Length: 618
Image (cartoon, rainbow, N blue to C red; front, side, top):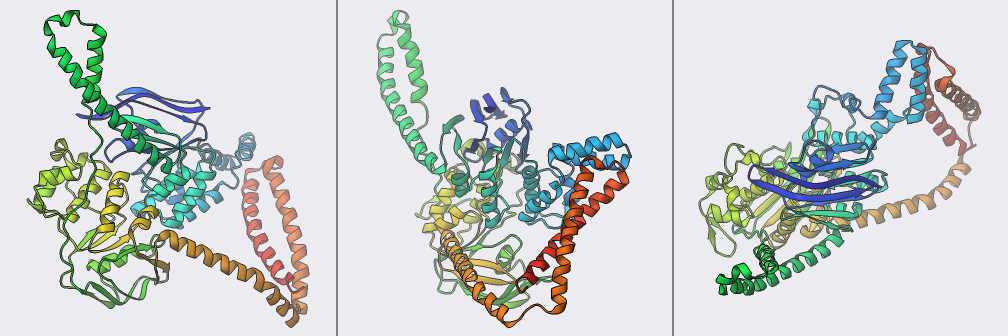
């Protein structure tokens, strides 16, 4: 079944044309990714598909009764609401059903209450709040009463993601869903989307994520749309094939154009009698021949400063915030040319370590020694503080009028911008008009211009397009200096780093000799070994415990009483379920029963756990 059809979409901003007459079709159950360079209009296209923006030309047709969930790159949330209030502020059908039930309980209108209870049954909304809390907890949002305005930028993005997933819409439109997620969250989200019944349309630069989740890829290139039926690995192979064929076609057209141009020029007096089809064909050949051949690619070859023997040494660093220990006696000595990746959950102290190294944050205890030749380039997660009213070229000119390259060349600001794929028309564009990825690329340029020999990169992959990521990876792999990276992009980490610093919590950091995939394999094997030990050990251990002791008289009595109490609670639970489903009409009573229903669930869990514990020795 066709869920969404976009036909002849054209979008431009002033003189900048993003695409002309592009089309795409999305079938039920498909998982679609949209890939393009920064500034090519990926976010604009998602906004058009989600109904948040309109195209200059063309139309979007969505199958009737289809619900859409849209995760924006910069979500808009109500800062004055609590986390739970913001979730329940949605217009989703299930949430509206719960609201109607709550209002019906207060109204004392028996008919309205009966209808609301029936709607709750049909929507299976009785456990909806638990599902909300589970998803929020998976995304490390545990204070449900905290005001949205007090959340960090990453927490706001995760709250918006949770709201989008909770509603389980027919179509999920996701703009960079993995930004601000740690590695465990990304893997959890992968599994959620793979098993989801929703049709998915997304923009993401996480290539492992793309490979696992998506089965259709649309590429925006040169204002056109190209479709690939397969995952990211398939896309890479077919894209190279497409570009090769396209370049071959252009080259043939250029050769033919020269011959036809010669024919046109040789007989100007007979032009009126020439075959019209040949003149028309000449114009078509001319259009193809003057297309640009795909050879342009950003290359990073900026010179780095000389690196001495002593790099950066960290001795017994200790750092805590309130009751949370982030670093506990951490010692590390960086070596020449090494590339270190940092991984761990959000809020565990990764960025804090980076800030301590550069001196923007003090440590509580410990010492840092930095070599005299070290020149640090720090790419921050919250990055630049560009003035939106400045032009792109002004940002570069303020740093230097002459930029040294790795091969000895020196470039002017204009040449340097061209080198980083900022074409001349963009040099005098205002910063405020750049896309998120273009701002990040410009910010990266300002870091590299200072010729650092120790690069610290905090989430450098967020918002960069895949082409730029590949070039950055190649540059870092050949970089002479040291690199320290915090990233949740597994593909990026695998290609760049030599080993990992794994933040395990409570200030403990493990130095692992390998990349992220190797660490995950090691961790998985560790878990399997531990589980195998647990399976074999408890039998003999249980036998030893059983031989050592039996239940005391008091425990035996408790065990017998628990069986009776559990039976009574289960009976009461069934009776309350029946009353909530229509056997009770008094609004006050309904609220009391609902509260008691929750209490029974908690009580049953506790008493069942105790019954199992005593049963081992009964």
